[in-house]
Image (cartoon, rainbow, N blue to C red):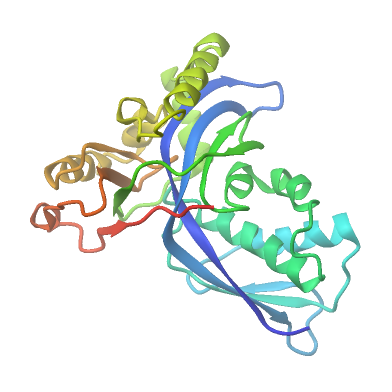
Length: 286
């Protein structure tokens, strides 16, 4: 097999509405997930001689890697059975930051495995991705999607009017599971009726001229993330001071982003002196 490469884009949640916990322990969600140009770089190639299983090389990330789990899932679902493979991951997306880096790596691993198997448009990927996690599904075909269910249902959304996102990296890590537990403790979930109403509002706002619905940009998990990581508060204030029309936490945090409508947004980087890694990113289209 030849050496194959792919990008694994990060994401921001333009909105995230949290529903009640289901019988399987997962929460119902309604979220607009936007892939952005900040991306990890993934290489798939045969593992060195002597390797007994698939492996991942990813500097700075320890423990089991979801991208290797994705390869195992693809093998099990399809019968693809080459010798052990190596995934080399050049991390650009911060870890445990609410930008879906690990999930996007897994989605890219699925795309690479399908390409290596000679079926780059393999429809079975849609069945494999939900087994790996909600963000894997939304990043399987990076762009703008409406995510529902517990994240396993995604619908592509037509590109909206131009906008950019200012990403501010908060130098902490948050466990997604811990943030959801804190959300439960704080009673942040919406009823089924409320969640369904929010979905209808979003779908209605995305029809017609597809303007960015600023009034709907909201994250129900934000109070939980802020409770666990108070440094988020200053980052939100900095995004607003830099000129963002909306500033919110991405996913389970702690990354903060600001929304700037238009093709050539004016960003006051002087307001971001405490955040040297802050950068303006373009959204990706499918």
